[in-house]
Image 1 (cartoon, rainbow, N blue to C red):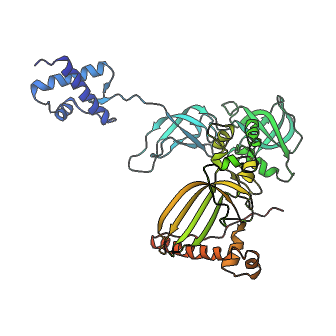
Image 2 (tube, one colour; image 1 turned 90 degrees about the vertical axis):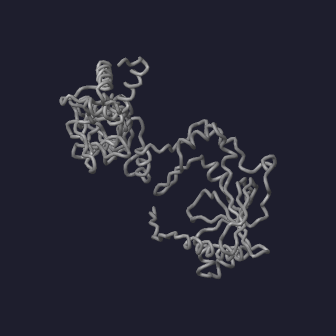
Image 3 (tube, rainbow, N blue to C red; image 1 turned 30 degrees about the horizontal axis):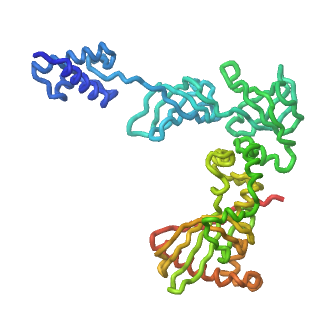
Length: 440
């Protein structure tokens, strides 16, 4: 039986696909021929010839049992190393597979969070949670490029002192300070760049130079600042972003109102925690002539001031969010924007994106529209003040906001309707006391 070249190539492709689809399993030539429906005498010979050709091309290999299996070129596995104080670690290399265990002798002194490549020493057990055991073969990227801690002045060989590291994942390591950077005072909290990492000669030692002094360890607020530095929270805005923010006017210009609906006469209010500095949404509600409810939700139009590709946009993208700490907020945008023109402060005209909804007595939104607007907040309300009006019926608070009380009562009605509708859909409310840290 003569097989044309094209047919030979097709047969090789069929065999290789079958073996690749079943990688890790070997088959006899007879089993492969049977799978392809070529198991009679005339057809079996081309199968054997194709297997011999694939073996010469190093696409398949013969096992000790004389069976054939696909040669799979292993791509290096890359993942994140998670270290343990006892020396061993795990590498998270695939979200769908158990982490790979790394024996203390096989970590290459990787630190927690390092990006590493690994090879498998022992495969995991299929059908169980037992993952494979592996060995770190290289450190692709170090997690720690700088460290934060308390400086202790002492002479240790060629070093001017030591940093007591703040990071709990580094509490078994020592960090010695070279004289190539700043020379801080005893007990000052500092940041330092890492010059050398743990290795076979010094498995628990890192070295580097001090680049910045945060302050004295007993100075108020230094503990929070050390957290900011330790987690690389960007707390200073680049010059270009600040210059862009400084050029933005602190009031709405006449030309900015063009194409926007003026809703400054509507009694919009912001309702936030008493500690809030940036007020980014306002609400308004009233009962309509047809018995339905009008609900307006108005969000500060930050995108009007932060255009794509500008320094402010790039910095906001880098930060991703404002970071709330014990006694301060590290904002996503400079305070000139976050607490100024982009904050819906009472009595001030602001640009907004608005959504107005018509909601029926059953809590169903029967109509809505979204549009750019110019608005003015009529009051800066707090949750406590609204609750004093609606729940406690406090005469003093009611008198203070007497013009707005009817609207709050309408909001209360609408809230009960929406809550009932929400519970009907099976939603669960979790109520727990909110912990607050009071700093003196």
